[in-house]
Image: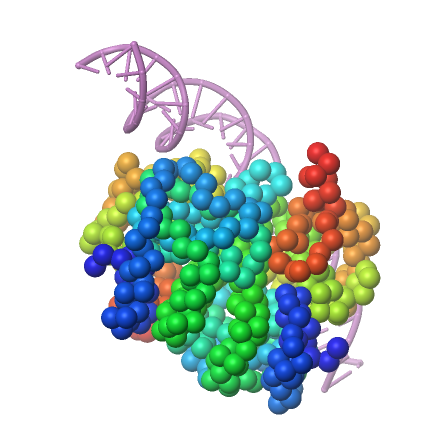
Length: 249
Length: 249
DNA sequence: CGCGGTGTTGACTTGCGTCAAAGTTCGTGG
DNA sequence: CCACGAACTTTGACGCAAGTCAACACCGCG
């Protein structure tokens, strides 16, 4: 499967050949950008919507005291900002975690596409609402879970999402985040993230080396995290260990 | 102004008389519910979208250990779940914080409306994207701000939103949240919320009594919170003290 | 081969949680 | 109109998870 957008959206629904063609068309013109590049800055009013073809990006906001909060992680197939077809100003910044190929889609093109195809329109709603659902889960993560569980949850989510777009192995995937990046995502210090990663290693749960994360025991990890993938709203998901446990108990 | 949905959406754009009529039509059939009632339960697949005409509601999720996280507060004019026209299962629960009047709009009606009127379609996208923007700000709040700032930020946001729909006085508004509710929203214990509220009182910032919040010094409060309302994407907002400071410095 | 960005470790501090007991407010029914 | 109980608020003593600071080690890259 070539087109990562189609691959992602097909987690929600199937498309006609015609729609398939329209989606493919969006991906043909792209540029290559390097890790660390800022795609869209807070306050800007971009006229393009960016589509990640390859590599990782992230949204972040900064607090008054300079603390950075990563509010979303984006992987291939994710649209960087549908927002801008309605909202005038970006309320956060988007930057790249790794080198990436990025397609810039003129906003009008996307709007036209939603008019042309009800299926695509619906699929874009789906993608937006899933992003929102992920934010809710992250808020639960930040507000209610201890650091150890939080990191476990983040690992489970990213493995599941990478899996869905065909970019994760059975046990491992590329995770281009430093420990500081993990901290900024989970609302923790890099020092504390380090201690947690150490502990996960000691307990045989994971290997994390050179931006490659290997999960040795996904079942145990998801139990620790209280991870239940239903918030990702994928059309077909297996029940997780946590769910099975809930059903049994 | 009668219709709270129209009042809210007009924070984004003006509507033709025809669209105005369509929006009014949505509000005619409503039921009255009491504080504490659950509107939609996690896991359900509702066939109606609820519109809050009156009173407050909230979305929440619970963690494995029983901790409750409030992931959204809803005030009159807010739509409880556009989600369900695309997503099959609710990933969170919606309940009432106060007695409320609620209009149930059949999902198909809403979908039809979006087809009939591009302006309404756009406005609903706007409302959804603003909800998402609020979630991002809450995540920043939870992840990066200290407890005192967090509560201050919550107060600033809710005053601003209540103001926008015409339900806040110059200095005060009805806030039907217990201190435990504030805690579940901000990721804090009710005990700690209490200590913070005490401190805010001592510093002359607020009066909080019997679900009525009075903000004596919004400017100071928003400076403490680092509150910048631009994430609410209202069409016309005054620059805040925090913004003025940033511009000056 | 050296440098900058990471990761690792230890000692120390602190904000917030926990537990537990009073105090207060409010709605309800006698 | 009062009495009662339930829900909410307040207070204090204490513990701990996570932050801070600082030094050092590692690793990959130019």
